Length: 239
Image (cartoon, rainbow, N blue to C red; front, top):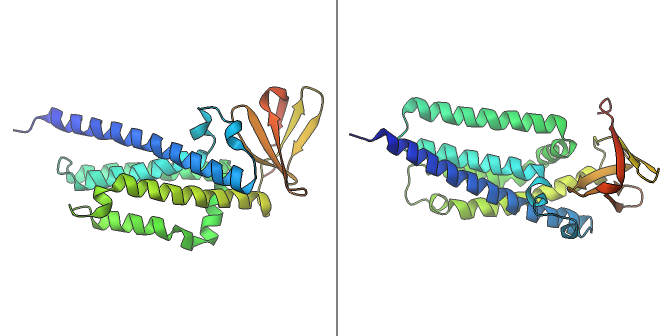
């Protein structure tokens, strides 16, 4: 007779493995994305402005990406594992994908960079072909023990992460250089200077200690130290 504790131990160990994998993917994504976006495209030596905690948090899309890949891995594991009943093989994937869809909708509605990044993907849909190919192959090979992606799924996910981080960098850069919806807010500095962030002075990103503002007329990026900011008023009406 099968010990019910085996299933719990199996699920717990795989949950821990997926969590560690998601964190590693988010970190890899952020490092690649920050290098391409800030260093190559904006010519900002971003790693001089980073703390260790910024590696993941500076790129929110990296967290979404790690969740997407981890959800696919979890669904594939559930679908191919005989420990789960037919009902569980339907319920858990639906629950995962609904949760990811809800997070995507929240990010799309509240974060202009994520919104414009997704629009950039819709306009250049062919750039998503590597991801679509990966998903199709993984789904087709759920029951195959000879599948290259199944045996090397972490390496495949890392390769896709490098691809998507590069794509995300260019889509975020297009937000600055093309007509897009931007965050609007007013920064009052401790020395009395007022900086209005709008469609001319554009919010380009931030770390825990610095704000980066892009001037679309001069193509310069200004780094403002967070300690120098006294008050920030966010415009919640302009979208």
